[in-house]
Image (cartoon, rainbow, N blue to C red; front, side, top):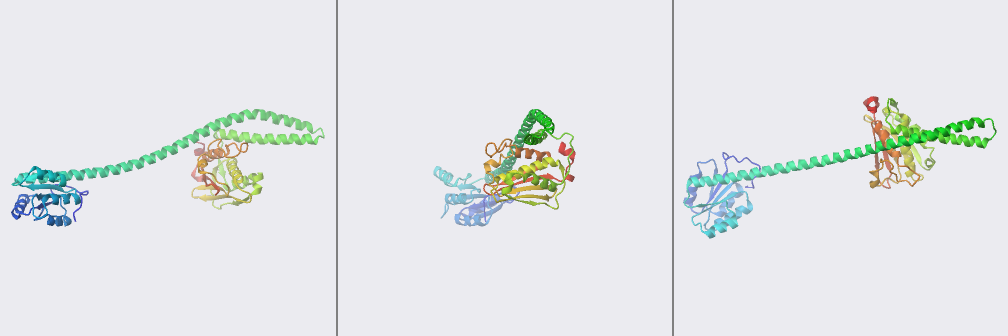
Amino acid sequence: MNSELTNQTTDQEQNFGILLVDDEPHILTALVRSLRRYKWRLFSAPSGEEGLEILEREQIHVVISDYRMDGMDGVTFLRLVKEKWPDIQRVMLTGQASFEAVEKAINESEVHRFLNKPWLDAQLAATVNECLDHIELIVSNRLFETELAKRNQELSAMNLELEKKVEERTQALIQAEKMVALGRMAGGVAHEINNPLGGILAFVQVLLRESRHHEDEPTKEALETIQSCALRCKDIVENLLSFSRKSSGEAHTEVDLNNVARNSLAIAQLDPRANDVSVRLELGLDVPLVLGRSGLLEQVVINLLQNAFYASASGSKVVLRTEGRGNQAVLVVQDEGTGIAAQVLAHIFEPFFTTKETGEGTGLGLSICYGIAQEHGGSLIVESKESEGSKFELRLPAADCLSDKELRE
């Protein structure tokens, strides 16, 4: 069955199909005689109806039809050819090239060329070759359009991927800049606090020594409380200073994430909110050792546990789990709490961003945790939906996959 031109080579040495239609037998014979020297497949039909039958079963590229024929005339026949096989080149053969015939053929059939009877063999062959050249142009244009569409599609996909990577890199740079700014500020704040804090501790220790000579127990207890609070502040300041600078020369050691989980839970459970929830500790048996600083990693886990306690309703469950995952050690803190809204989720690792009430949070906890995870060559991942709870995963590379030198760099 005939069809529109598809991706095919249109070299003139190939056997193109040429259909000749005329209701006069001697005209058909003469047309065949004129064209049979060429390597074209020639088909002839004595009427438009028979011509349509041939078109249904053969691959035809050029149709040459007489204008006046009994039954279906040439204009009607070529119009039907145009409607069903628009790529086929149509040539009108007529002995009466009146203006009316030309106008009708052009308007209804969109013929490619007109040929007058009697014709010259060279003129007939040239017309057919011109039609075949036009077909080559159509096929070439289609190939070009197809290739262009393919390239445009590939380019669009590459642009989307590039935009995605640029956006990801931009967000990473923004986050890094925020962390650097936070580190500088934290260092400055810590140094400013350290001096008066040192003075407080010094005076308290002097007063405690003097109180040993007196039996003023209330005063002694008050001084010990002040000293305890000051030492706690000192620890916080040390953490801020640690956060504000990269470890310079301090070696990372092999750390057991199970021990980090146990120690962190023991401290986090001192939080009064821990009394309202049930904490389940699930320690993996195949958790690889990691290179790091256990104190900083415990800081991350304590913060995650306290956030889980804060988000959980009374009687709900919090899970603290460790597991080995390929060449990674993973620590998971999962709660059944309020969850995190989508618009909030994108900002939770930003410095000073918090959803807690004023006075209940600084917005630094998760930001610091994020920085500690990166310092250890790992990542901190969160999954959460409103009213469905949250899951935080601290993912760290196994010790045998990352050297201490790589971490410090």
